[in-house]
Length: 445
Ligand SMILES: [Mn+2]
Image (tube, rainbow, N blue to C red; front, side, top):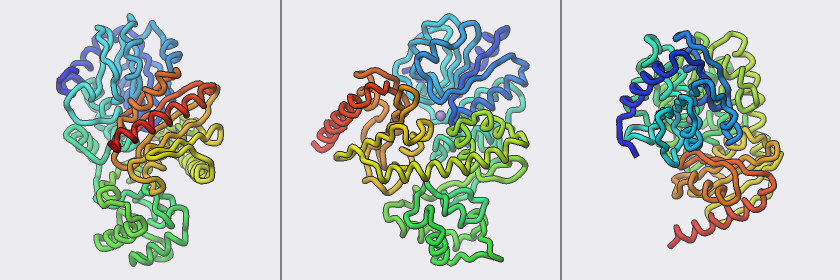
């Protein structure tokens, strides 16, 4: 693979973009998660400033038919998606720009295909929103107001634990405040509420349990003032350290480095907000099918805030019922793996989130590969995650199985996904189980 510096590549491709799309309309395609939505908003705000004609389409996932239906008379600009279809794109005559951070299976050479992807260089890992921000920084003079959107996308994709040079520069551009603390959000609201709704980390006996919350706070010697608790960001050092101890005692598997980290505060709708909360709200809107609200909320349009808050509350309810359903339903389980087929009981747009929550909870042993399945139309959405350190590239594991029975797959080493036809449900479970069992034998040797 090519070994060039990401920044130089971004600069080169941004020049090519201006040149090649001079008299062309741009068709922007992006993903519907927080990273994709924030990338899209940074991009359309930039294209507006450039006075370029464009249209935007958001996808929950990209399938071959979608790609075949992309317009051929416009330049394509694909954000946070597209890396699984390079072969198809290389065949096309039109100009295609892809800004993505998903793994690339095979690099295709074509003079019309321009790719920005950290996997092609030896640089740091970046979200699509950070890449899009750096790209747009080359296109317009004043892009700094978009820096907070880049940070929201980075958090949406859980990439905030390791901030290297480029993300650091984005934090500086956005004048974003950072504070060390427990990663429970929203850190700006009363701590009792933040604890009760905390699903990541999931705190046994505290999450979803208001009595348990009170008990934990009593133990940490944090008491309400006039009946109201302070926010996490307002705790003093002693209160913070007592709270950390009490939380660690609830789950011996918690490690300091996992529950402690940076809290990011951004100015949003003219208020100082916890970026994790805003990121979760954008995600909730999209996953419940309200993509327009997600975009308007990112643009800080007045009416969108209340709407986003309502959707977020509803989304949290969905997550709780989905987790309850999973705790009761039958699963395919073996050494080091579990397969959960939720069928039509859980929305295909939140099944990936459920897999992530399960992988971050204390429910399964460290190293367990969790695969969830949910129906949509005549297909099944599949998500795989691993608890703790992963031993196997999940993208490769899933693609090996799906290749045999037909369907799409993609993603990252530690979070992969795919789709198959409903008629292949049994065959998929059987094959996956077989592959996972072989994997265990290999690892135990
Ligand atoms: Mn992403």
